[in-house]
Length: 255
Length: 255
Image (cartoon, rainbow over all chains, first blue to last red):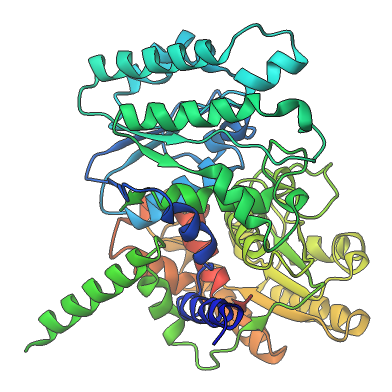
């Protein structure tokens, strides 16, 4: 039995198992996580307050005037909405409060500027952060002068500050990702951008956070459809890409 | 071994199986479908064009200027977005086109008025319709004079017209639902509203459509959290409720 047959068989097996539950094929996302050594998950508990933070990918057109938790319009139409809806559905008996406070264009220092209001005041028990693409990208497009050291130092300071105020907080850190060859993302991104990915992973380890390997997830997704199917500009996920991110995000929690 | 232990054990079994895939507990929605005799599903095929139609529940704040398929902002932030994202994710190799053309406040006759542009011109192969709550509700609130006969006749005419233009089309019909005792929904709704639910089911049978028993889904969801958790006004789903609807919708297709 050759490897091709082997993997074909296991693909079919996964498909039919997933089909039996009427749910999505988990194998693609699972294999992206297989390389993560810790296998750590955040256990969602009663009365948890879960905060999504980040840039435009997290923002996704959310209505910023809506301050209440668990309200669809406050989530926009990206991965945070999809993941939050599933959190609230699966944790219906847990009195969860879920917020999205991502803002388009943000880099780490801009999170820091609004962190008191948009994180600490909400007293989250779980903080999910996906930040870093602009910290690099804007050096190419907007004369931003921050370096990889700025990113690391600012990110570390932000998490230290959070831990001081909220000692019990658990972090979920999403890897900055890009899909090469699509619109905004070309060879000028490399190898520099890879350092931001590595830094996010390093910081996740340092703070005992769960790490979401989004780059691997998007790389593997291209086995089923070309990169442009998952992101129209190399940076922002499509509707299919948003579901891909949400599925990866949901792998990091136990509800 | 008594029944209580039995069901407890099977609950735990379902949970852990679902957990193994990092996905939601399907048992609640599955049991809602267990009463449906046909067990029919729509098999999603290559090049399918899938259209979501309905009222505010389907609309969910979608950006109406966006005419392209598969674009998140064109889906708003309700069940249609969540279901579409999963369709596109699971059917990544199928070249699907998915549209949402729901409009807030619509009754059947208003679908008919815009059906050429917002359905027939798109040449859908799968048409999902969720309509009826306003056909009843507006008789209480807006002096609408349509009756249950208007609803049945208009709905039947709409589907006949669709079949004539698109003989191969497959219909998915969602049951109009309401959660009693919450804000907009009181005893004045009954028994009259039940006739709209029954009519939608009857029409689904008549057109060999897959029927989504949303009322049963929302009734059963109250085993895990009170009605107001799933809908803030008795009619419009919350974020958790949107996921509940999407999960039910996804049970009707095989991708």
